[in-house]
Image (cartoon, rainbow over all chains, first blue to last red; front, top):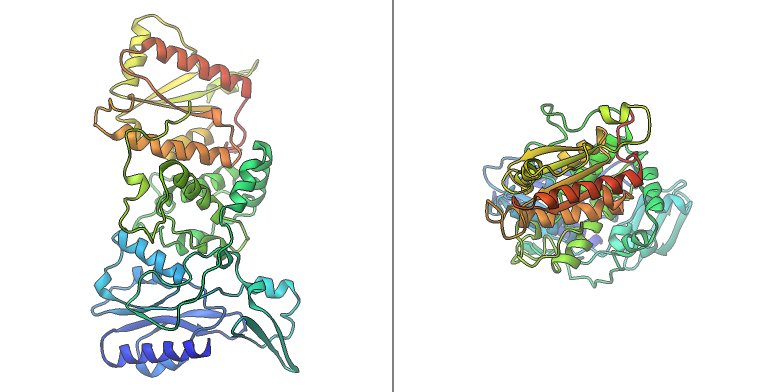
Length: 317
Length: 145
């Protein structure tokens, strides 16, 4: 990890000071142990503040949409971010020649909620990763624990720990050992209709419609979003189960066939709604009905909802 | 909407999005052929089954529909060559998704009805109305306001 941190600083300094790029987007440490914020750096002198630690989870490529670079922007991509970047490219939202990509092999990042759940967070000052272990630093000493126990669930089922696209790889490729990603979807499919409805309405009833899941999503990049427009007002403002359901169905449906399954929606949700399962249901159905398709990775295949075959399965009446 | 405000036994409200070139003409034929189908069905004419957005369907449910039918040309017969092929993919996914969220699958149906199938139009609408009547009112996706 530490080595990678150094390489990030070097890469950022090199590309900024040579004038190759005008901005570097990376991560910076916040005041608390679990805070690693996106950082936007234009001065080569500030690149020393860039870090890579077990909490550098934010996907940086959505920030590209807000920047209009004259030269280039340099960006650090993990495996999941690279899939999202490919999707943004495919949707025509970024220009490949305007970005310089540094790939970061990543075998998983730490979910602060899991650290808190184990009670290790009390008086915690810093967390570092040493090979397969996490080291927790306190005022009076340190403790160690296996790192994989604290990973985000999206990291445990990650299929692309090494970026599928980048200009320069920083660090060695890491092995991939994903858990079955459709396990929860299959479990729900086996449940009865009423059980499913109760499960989802319980989750959706917590939704505050902050739109974080939309904002973070690399497949949600429309210039004008259906949820924002006032005329026609498709989505009302009321705290209302029908409206919330409308929002969640529409969000998942709009990214069907383009969702790269990076799991950011579920990760970012402040209320812990398992949003990735909604997207995975679409991915699973698309794979079953129209052939395997991996958005963000299968660049030579046509997107499943932008094409058809005359012998597709019929809509059951 | 008025159907459900009436006192008495439950009468389902069904919104049918019918493509201008086949299913709407099929409905016309059912009318000129004096075939009967339930008055619970409200037909909305659309240019093509593929232009029925998921928003229309969800909004219908929100505002009181108990069932939604999308009807279009048979695959291969689309007036715009391929619209219904795209619609077929999208609606199959949407149907399975709504079922995944716990909606009864009967509430959202897709049928292919050609301009010459007036009797089929009447039969589909009758059958759908009876299915939804048996299911009872839609409470899951409905606005409670």
